[in-house]
Length: 254
Image (cartoon, rainbow, N blue to C red; front, side, top):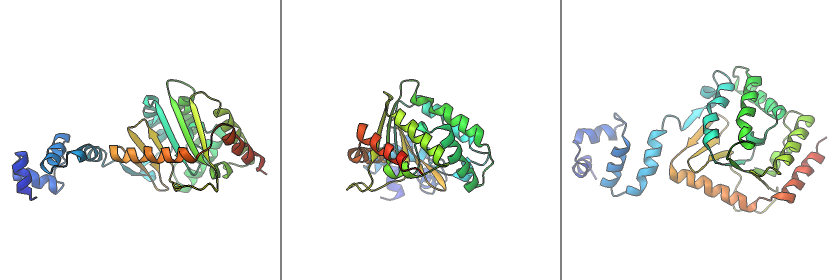
């Protein structure tokens, strides 16, 4: 199809089609729907609308997010946490923030601050993270966590800090709102190890990379992360088996 074909099917002026094609004008939601209809691709409209809305914020460097420190970043996500009913978190690197102790968070955020060279407001950032984590204990929230067994063996902040964190993780498994699954090391699997990601209801996914945070809202992409989480859930162990892996990690601490 040519630009004139699109203009004829949508009833637009050819100049509007040209501006949209060349990125000189940002499309409205209705423009996206009309364009997709003209191309007989209505099923793509929802994903394209979501991508258009979040194009500027989908990939954001940590340097930009953390330029004034970590506290504001923690606080900025409180509204999202408060309105989320179902949290689904998969991590292959660190203990999920929702079940971190303040000592573990202190050690982790200190490392992040030093590595990225951001202003040191770790104490305030930890306090904000602990406030945000009230979602585990208060309100109408459900939390499903899946962690790789290797996360239990990564010593963050020293032996004493890690022992306290693993002890808290054991306690978290008894909370009625929390489901904790551990993917055992060495288990045969069809789903490969992924980057850490957080799913907020069925609406948004946050992915954590070394240099940037990625926010996904396109329905098709969110659905893929939900599917990946479900696959991880199939190979994870729960209840007594998960607690045994945590206890084994505690026993292995020097």
